[in-house]
Amino acid sequence: MKAEEIKKAVQSGYAKVALQNIPCCGSNSSCCGSAGPAEDISKRIGYSDEELQAVPDGSNLGLGCGNPVALASLKEGEVVLDLGSGAGFDCFLAASKVGPNGRVIGVDMTPEMIEKARRNAAQGNFTNVEFRLGEIESLPVSDNQVDIIISNCVINLSPDKGKVFREAFRVLKPRGRLMVSDMVLLKELPEVIRRSIEAYVGCIAGALMKHEYLAAMEDAGFLEIKVVGEDIYPIELISGDPTAQAICSDSSMSPEALNDLATSVASIKVFASKPA
Image (cartoon, rainbow, N blue to C red):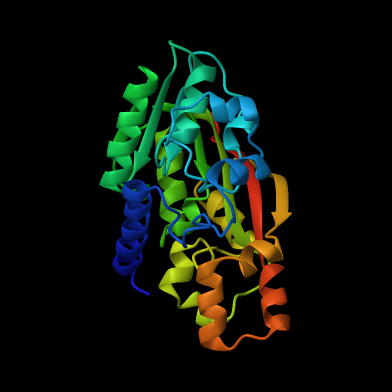
């Protein structure tokens, strides 16, 4: 698949989510295949009831695979950048932690998501949050401007993850931190899934092998790279995902092959830092 083809498909899928408040994999799953309403998904991946009630209605679309804000150790007055900020869910949680003297910047390549996030910010009176239209491979942020970068199940959607990490490194201040939740592979995927645009938008086909993902961070210059959490992608979520169902039906995958697929995909939480 060509990079531009991937970007257009991802943008189209997430525009649909923003406009219709429906998951891009179908009416009962998130973009990463999780079944159930957005609130239930978010609780399952690590968000508390208090966090869910602290954000504007419509900002939580159930698209993540972890809670990077909870692991980021944000401090009063810091500048936070969210890669692939969507409707602003993690940005609003971060805003309450950095306070009025801090600032949160959300970057997303989908105009419909940016519009939705800005409306949510106005609705919740989040004056220390701003949203910028742009690609995470070419961030609309100056060098050495950010204390910490967060991202939630978005970098796997980029066709050039190495460039994403180089851009992240560029905009971080010296001693800046990176805290991301993302999808990685523990085994190679079947060819039919690797070639599927639907699976790419659904966070499966675009994932790198775990060691390749961590190596891309190291190659960008990051130090102290640590996997602080890892969970196997549950089989019931994949089997209930309309995208996965369509792929399995088209390719006549056996139950054994589907089982193998389930143990191939993991959600990881990764910390890294930029040297002084």
